[in-house]
Length: 266
Image (cartoon, rainbow, N blue to C red; front, side, top):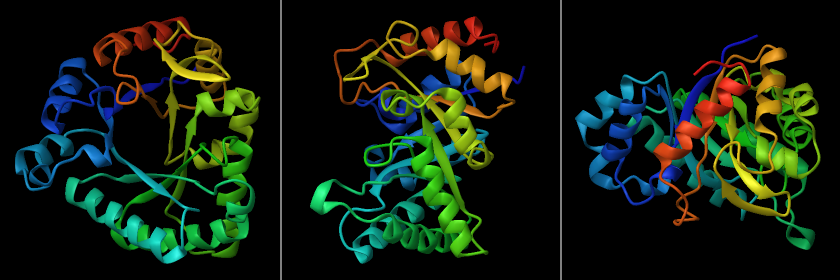
């Protein structure tokens, strides 16, 4: 089976600065991270020591809160350009975005989302980063994200800076199996990654330590390895939204245990 490589999100250390997060990552032997965009303070962008430490990692993504479908297109582009510029300042290779199309009368149509993604891909290509669209909010299924990305590529042959983030919680919540998600997203994960987390249940996203909740993480990890995925698997431990949960170090150890049960080493 393919070997999985662990990354970790800064959502697990909400009260700490980027330097402390990097200390934890280095102690854990992890070589990939997602940096929570809103948590980076101005001085950290200017800190050459932090930039050097980030350069030692194999994978660095800036997890922005930019929503492709939210607001006017000009507003989306403004927010995206700011995130891309910050990614460049940190040396990040990817900028994570959400579909954010809304609901009902406020929903942005998929055609508009595709046009925005084409424009985003040009901005990303000029800056040398990838725009990674996550299975989230208005487009939780892998099928939903793949449809958008496929259409963006079909409409613009030069597009080459778009990729996907597969959040396994959200695809599971909407009833899409791991195999089905891979069928849709495998081509978009070459330069993307998989996010894992555990939760109380489909209707209750409150976090549980990996392996202790209802999300079938062991089965999901077995499936992706059997299908040949050997990329990044990033732990998103949402302590920023749920401050009462265990420290990130504990969640990392639990995920190592899940990896071992799935036959992925670690």
